[in-house]
Image 1 (tube, rainbow, N blue to C red):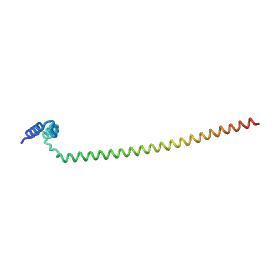
Image 2 (cartoon, rainbow, N blue to C red):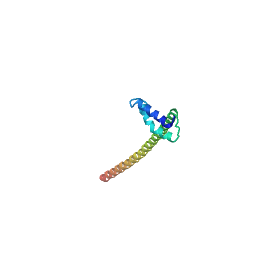
Image 3 (cartoon, one colour):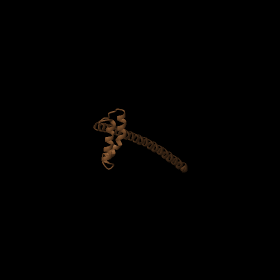
Image 4 (cartoon, rainbow, N blue to C red):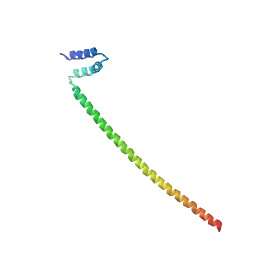
Length: 118
């Protein structure tokens, strides 16, 4: 059987199965790829190997995505922790400054009271 005859049989099968079947549209979609492969004498991997490779690629992608997500969560946690520490330092400085201003005001008030009493 020639390559052209093989492709003709696949095309005929796709047509016989029709667009409402499970495999008809899939076979029809494969025809251009099969033509290219056969024209270049390329024998493709079998469906099970292709499925296995696709599953491995998917699992690798999921693993990489999980690692990226975990690193992003860690980075987010680290940034939040740094922000909390910075906010606490700013608050502590603000409280010290408020205490200093309050003490200066009370001191000025005491001095003014003494001056008035004298």
